[in-house]
Length: 87
Image 1: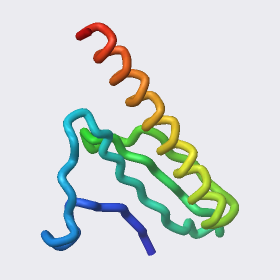
Image 2: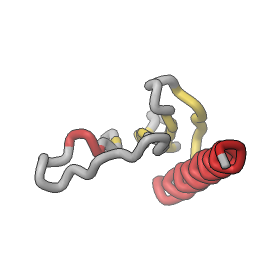
Image 3: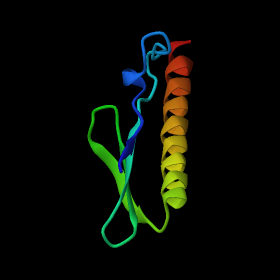
């Protein structure tokens, strides 16, 4: 089974607008024949950013969350630099 986050596919009533500069992150988690879990994180351009194998689905989810936090922190730092130079 593959799980993929897609806020763009949510019903229109629940869909929120993505703010300018907001990071769009997609991910997948799927089992492998060897009993591991393959996880991938994709950037807003659709290209694979990071992927790896985890021993459990929970571990894969933790690694994905870690990557999301890193990407959001980098985006926040970039936004602060832009607002500081604009001021």
